[in-house]
Amino acid sequence: MIQTHLYPSAKVAIVGTGFVGSTAAYALMINGAASEIALIDVNKNKAEGEALDLRHCMQFTHSVNIVAGDDFALVRDAAVVIIAAGVAQKPGQSRLELLKTNVAIFNDIVPRIVQHNPNCTLLVVTNPLDVLTYLTLKLSGFPSCRVLGTGTVLDTARFRYLIGTHFEISPKDVVAYVLGEHGDSEFMWLSQANIAGIPLGELPGYSLKLMQQIHQETRDVVYQIIDKKGATYYAIALVIAKIVRAIILDQSRVFTVSTLIEDLYGVRDVCLSVPTVVRKNGVCQRLPLILSEEEQQQFRRSAKLVCDAIEQALGAQ
Image 1 (spheres, rainbow, N blue to C red):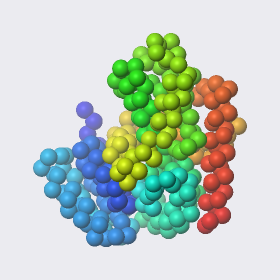
Image 2: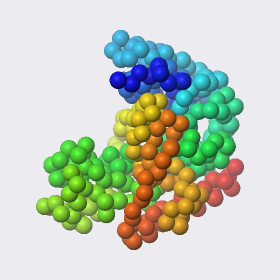
Image 3: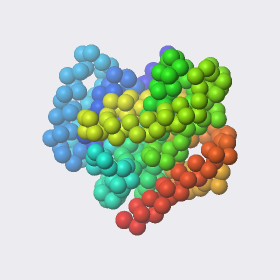
């Protein structure tokens, strides 16, 4: 059994204690990989209030030291720093429409994180995810293996849930991924999707129309959630906890996190989601990506949209 104390640091810092940041802290407490959680927010009272509430969970969870405040020195010695700060997506608003405001926020906070902790792994959660992951990479000066975004891990979970529901199979036994942008240009990696090694196309009840409907629901369900309850935070908090656990415990888990694409199907110098091995010190290995001709076109289209947004972001600095 792996013990967290065998690792140099099991401290996790979360910058931004809104719905996502605070729920991620709660998920991390239950998850048990972190020995210390630091909450940092420009609203000091909010961070301290969340910490106080979380400390009262201690009888029912793993023992975790919770610290909080508005001082970025709190990120010191953290193995992973989660960036969840920024303006949240509003009903009817696309992720890319958040760009200008959140770029300004990242221009402020990323250098302050690096000042106090130049050796951490940075995990970006804020939207537009791929653009801000790329911006974080450039602002931090870190090697690309230590900067990643949550990417399409949640989109993939939604995709598997919907496939499993249709075929009456647990989503845990569905092998299917959503790739590209965490946003409207994301696409199904349908050519390699399967259940127990059986290609989806060979299963009774399969049709391309069905998969297009499932893809549309996967892509658009976030807007339904935001419209109905104002924000999404439970599922993404669990995504964050799983990724952080993989880093701290050196688990070599495969996630479709957003990382720097250096040269893949003609795509380069952009952050997008592809199956990637996540272990200690972040992203250490990318698996071979076999795309059909149509999927290659979708991948390049997704890259073009994110690259255009990155140019806007860099122009807004």
